Length: 89
Image (cartoon, rainbow, N blue to C red):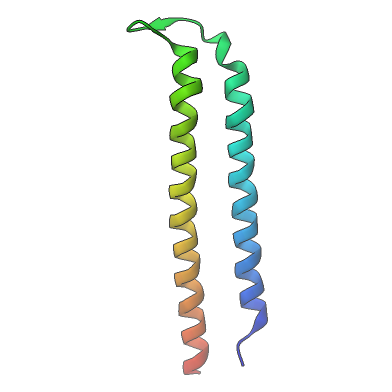
């Protein structure tokens, strides 16, 4: 019978990862957009605060999705190796 503690550990790590990434998403959504007006200078005809609010947040959200996918794949691979190691013993 599989050991439930390893499955629970995987779930706990996954939930912690989600909490950290959601916190980063909230900070970027509200914090960066709130303080972006302080960066009111122009680069190539566009105000920098507009670029940060419109494009910077989107790039951070894409990075969050990529980080989540990579880390969860590694965690699932590790859990699969641990399960196969238990089956062999």
